[in-house]
Image (tube, rainbow, N blue to C red):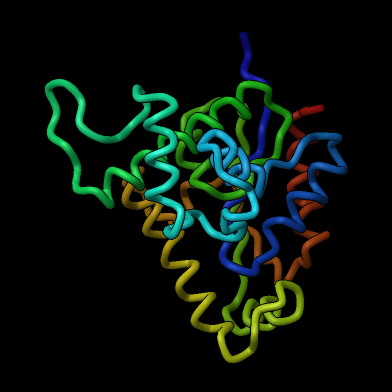
Length: 216
């Protein structure tokens, strides 16, 4: 059976990942899965979704609680000690648990296809999947700083720190768990500069490629 088509969107902070994804999904009649990733991980861990940071690849303050709740509910997915293995240090074990659950959510979403998946390492999890279009959104730092202030509501005095830390965390997440450098252009089918194209323009480029592939 042919895998149903899907699109992953990787983005630099404030490069418009959510906006582009929404436009692409609306044009194609597909589903967007963005902050739903962290909401679903929280749900499976038995935690209120509003406790999960929705703009980051990880929510450090929740790692221990999520890990404990998941281990209690489903011991087989715990990243702690297993028969014949050595226990990971606590922090690594907690993050490994989050990664495992996030991968399950991504894989389940991908099985249905016709979805636009934003972030959370989806481009790495699904790197070898046929019928996947991997997109990376970028923009000059100065422009993204302004976008963060204007569209994301980040305080101007904090914006550069937030931007740098977020991109660094996202890079580290993909490198640590998948051995990939997130900024490597050859990992993607297209790299789009949203400062030049605009969010809508970038979305139209993605839609055009999906239609060229005769995805419906």
